[in-house]
Length: 300
Image (cartoon, rainbow, N blue to C red; front, side, top):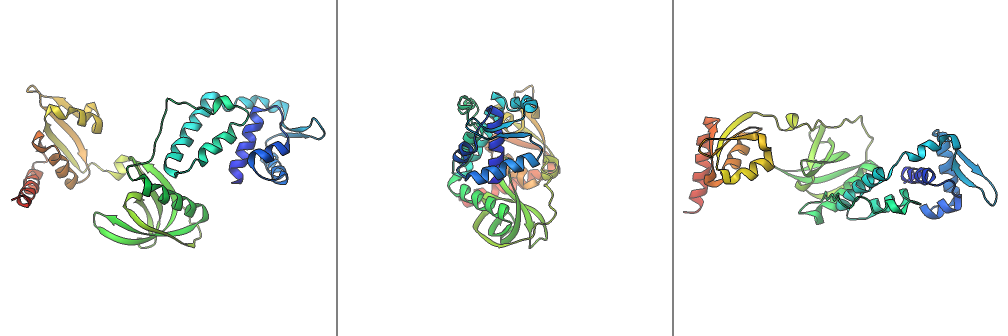
């Protein structure tokens, strides 16, 4: 892409005193004419570039602008590399690592990155996730509609959307787009989508980013209090933090937290087996009893 290439050219110029157009053309695998057009675009964007003809000539950044050669430090480049590698973990390609190599041209000591930060954004179903991300990303860039079957708690349906953004949130991948059937922007979980197909082009509308704050997506409709056996302390700390409970005199843990729906409360409590007792809301104790009774009947 032109923007990626121009960023790469600027990065090279920030790290080298001078570089020739043929060298840049070879590095970015384009023609010299394309490099010349990119240089013109950078100059129009306000980057003071100087070109010198002749045997010892080349392209450089104006001397008075050289202070910006420190724009990207070693730590900056390592942080960028860690982020780009995390994208490769879900794309199923190494295109982002290749981009980083171009950004780091002439500074090979930066290529190793920070090996102490390893980010993997893939999932247990990576084999099916990566093609979805690639298809949706391409549809977003080319402004093409996407159709798919969607599986939700209320049932399955066939949807067609205008995709705008891919989002990684709450340890899962989502696509944000305009849903034709609902006539509004909606968030769809990639793990619930099957049979993806790209369709006709669409005219992009004014889009906004979704409000993904926990208060908006998971409102605390129910305030839960429960007694939890201390053998499950690790789970409370991992899922809700060390401030979500207090230790009672008998060693049991008094858990207090907000939940969005009662179904989630019931299944959460039951997942502890006999290691938890719901105290509040008291009206849900009967729901738990009926849930357990339904399981018992299946094994009679």
